[in-house]
Length: 449
Image (tube, rainbow, N blue to C red; front, side):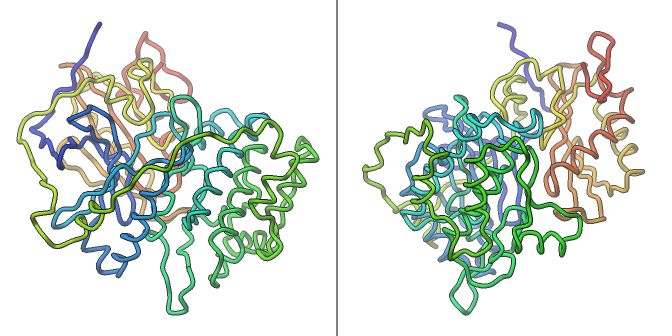
């Protein structure tokens, strides 16, 4: 079997945390980075969320995060991303999570449009079953959206970030939850109004928005003017498309009730005729013993209980196909076919020298209004003009897979996914002399064919 190797363009630092070898960054947020990692004892792939202790302490969120991590360790549901363990060093907290290879449900909708009713119902049943399980254990999500719904290799739903709401939520003096409201299209009216709210009712509203999108292919509430958007949400101003079945319309209308006191509850959803059709609750065992020793050790000050962070100053090498498959499951076609314009990241191959690749991308990005920061074979591009979800920030890196062949990755670090795709389409039209033209053809969308 042909195995291509990724050669280091410059000396790299191989990092280990305890028994885990850290790979590349696959996600970033205000509080944390998420990195692909490998358990060196079992070779199992995992995702590790890395929190900065100093940031968490400044916001006085230590106790809340520790409490919620303990709660998350109790969650053992087949449709929820599992938390394996927690580790800590002097400066960081490492949350080891199940690694999901099937991508986001968002990508499925963006690429293929709305789902058939049977498929949408299946995902909604898995979502409600997972949410119900977590609510029964006092765990609420408060940021349910398509981007937080992943798919495993078998096509089953996996809800991510359940219970880790302290990273976005703040408890004020009144003792009630208040949100920073990162994704207003999905949040309930009572959350937008920033008055104390019930986490269960707010999650149910978000589930209703998700069901609408699965069936329609677009959001129920959308407006470029944020005030107008809030008004539509607060008054539940939405219209179900004509292709919605009567049962689906009735259920969505009961979920998207702006009054949380009269909004349908999960027990009522479970008895809804449309929901119940073909519903088979998963059978699983969650009765085994759970230890919290690792959580308390991670947040403690005792160096004896801290995990070792080790660095190995050697050039790294990696299977090139693994490089492409880290975030989406193994698909060898994608090494030379960058058909990922719907993703939050995209790649293309090039036969140009790496310095020329970086320079050409920078030259193409500046006229689009982006500020550039270059460091060796990595680059950050940021639009100083804020978009729908803040400033669009794109991370770029060049990897060498053969002496004259490079893989170039562009990944949305911050900002709106759709704005990232628009940026990439504009950028790619200026990079036709950089993208490797496999077979002498380039697709109209600017990606290598």
